[in-house]
Image (cartoon, rainbow over all chains, first blue to last red; front, side, top):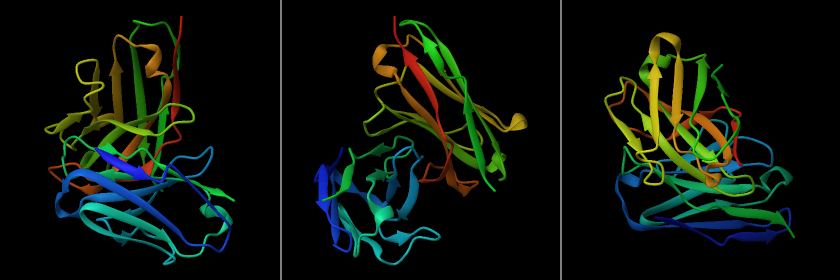
Length: 107
Length: 123
């Protein structure tokens, strides 16, 4: 089970966002990805392997973690960053699972 | 350009069956695993099922195992989700998604998604 916190993060543009994804069991090989979903859109891949940015993702978006604790950080929020973020574990293939999501909203 | 387009959604009654399809183009369909993910409007993402490129490896979420069946037809570049005994809590947008690796024997993360198709289960 993946637990994301907080459920909602209220911040202003330019601020730093720190999102957490905690697993109930160790995620082997750092098999964890992060996705962003803007309203009315399909999710977009941000991070895989716990810390590797996907193609085209700016370096103000970073991620780290291992074992059971993972973090996504957006260093300076821009208008397009206000969205919902999900972590996905694929360590237990062929069964995968998402976290419940964190909404980053404009304060 | 990778393109995934879901179809087959609609309004159905509780207890009915429905088959969703996902037509793919723009990549080597025969060599990529694929997944189904759903999202109740206004709620989070739920991974439902995944199938390896050769259908040898299939996984399901506990919530749908035994009611939903994932399959693929590589000759038609199509992915399917057969859903049985539908319930009102199956009402959601259903997305297909492409696994990242070519020829992998296990499931990994997804790098492309379709726009989704809405399934509504109501009497």
